[in-house]
Image (tube, rainbow, N blue to C red; front, side, top):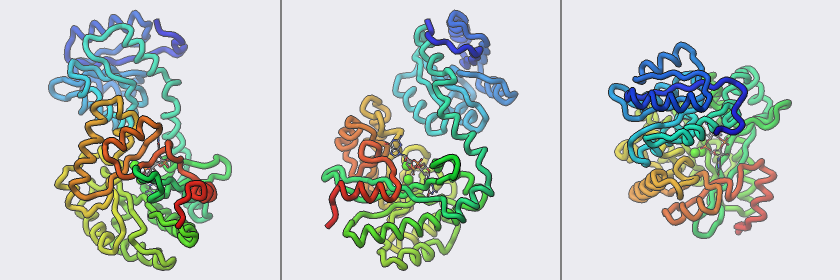
Length: 403
Ligand code: C2E
Ligand code: CA
Ligand code: CA
């Protein structure tokens, strides 16, 4: 039934309060030649297996359980070393399963899909195939890389100018013209090539290097941006700010100085802050954010939809832009729950008078979906990937909007 079964023994844990269901799935898994099957009739028991260090390739998880439900169990699982896959299992309707899947993905859990009850052997086989270690090895690469980069290496990279800006355009939905460019950090490593920010941003935050990294990148990018403006290009520039940097009470003054040096109006600069980081420390941030806005900088909520902010919390901060996370953009056309979130987020942002950006537009279907939903600006691989400054300069010449 399963093609290309891995030679490594497969280990699966099934978590469901319905004991009959546990038995049925267990019989099916046995037929599918799963070597180790662990059954847990509650989430606490399941988590204790993980805490003990038991290794599983797949956890089949029921969403609706008394005491700790499946959503809560996933939240707990996200804080553990669990590296395997999850298949969600529920008698609930498909939309609940899809939403739960998005929630899990937002917590970087690897969800291979959802199973409506009663589950068939073929469906289980499909989940097992997707859960095979090779299917998600790529995901597992990143934490290993993070571990292997040291603080000293990062400090030296910042000092020797190896952290460089890449630029990714955001274009207007109507005229398909560049409206702004987002600066994305890259580490040009002498032996490992171009390293993703996933490898070093968290480390920079944890080791107190993030402010230095941010200012260095800001300076470099503003210098390049100033040249593009001299050539007549008229787009805005966006930076990702860590919430830690908002603890600098003189941040508005420091950024203002940096742009004034190049005669750039603050209104041309936008600062992106992720929704989840903001909500962790709203009071401290509010002061600095309000003063940044007073100085004229634009403020954008990044990764919207992945945090748990409420409308009233959001309306406290004078944001100018809302970026809807790609989890609700790419593939939204065939995912009713994602589409609902996309459409309602856009309606919300319009009411709050914010510019709406949809990120993660990867193909024509995504493009058509977000245009129809009313997105103002669009960003994603379908338009352009993040580019080094010379490639971006060339891209600009090819997408003439110079005045
Ligand atoms: P982000 O701010 O949400 O940036 C968007 C990420 O999505 C970028 O990843 C970009 O390359 C990627 N992306 C863009 N279009 C598409 C698409 O169509 N499909 C897919 N699958 N991905 C797309 P990148 O450059 O690896 O950056 C990852 C994250 O690292 C950023 O997420 C941001 O949170 C953080 N980051 C990057 N540069 C900085 C920085 O200078 N400072 C801080 N604090 N964080 C940064
Ligand atoms: Ca961003
Ligand atoms: Ca984002």
